Image 1 (cartoon, rainbow, N blue to C red):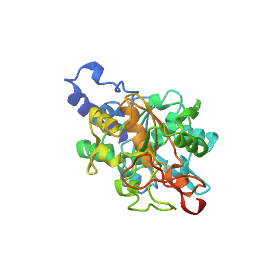
Image 2 (spheres, rainbow, N blue to C red):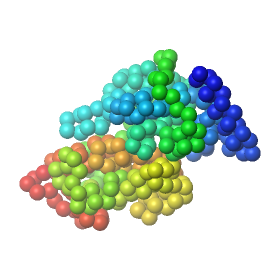
Image 3 (spheres, rainbow, N blue to C red):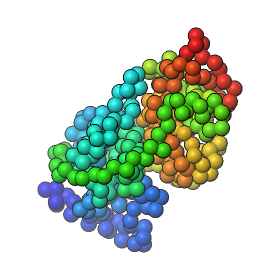
Image 4 (spheres, rainbow, N blue to C red):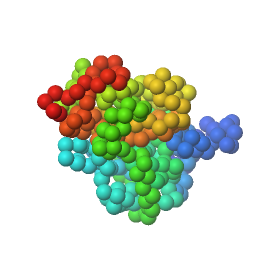
Length: 314
């Protein structure tokens, strides 16, 4: 039955893209980061293709997923470290997680999942950190767009043969609290906060946040504003995304540190920053760690460099 579904989808997609130049039927050149549903449908039977549905639990995956997609639990790619909920697990654990899902050195990985692409973006960052970002991509529009256009999903879990994944850690993609404190004190860093504006300004207090507001000097680019809409979670055009970051003060092609409450929304901004030509670095401890740490200043309101010293020595 699955083979028949795949053959049908490949036929439909071949017809859909038959008028497209051949060089546009391959993965895009922007680090192979984003694929369209038509591309995926035309390549479902590719030998090295691995599709991962990333979710908090298996509920939505079990209700219906893209044919052949395997389930990746968020808890397998983030861990609790102290009071910080979404830090990277041990390298051996991460390697084992992806290998057991069939992700190997020759795999082309397409990611989608729950929460409008947020969790898929975190999985992309994880693969990028492991040195495999160039062979991973997000599915533009996710399951929502796929189901609307093709209407074919399966409910039976997909099997996967264990693969072999060589890890090339890119430690430069992560910044830890001690280094960030020093960077912020020098006031020469470009910072992006991916949370909703009310949390960024300190009007709303996120779960677990001791002192509301944001890291001094950070500018706000809310991750959801980079999508066409939650009922149609396709990415806005790359030029529009780039313009939004540039208007927030990010230099063209420049390095920028991105954070959120606990490292998930920030992964979405990480992805879109990289997609639009910037060089992002993730602070995955994010504001949950920063606001609870000793000696870290917090700013409220619209942003800027004047720093509010923490009360009570915290």
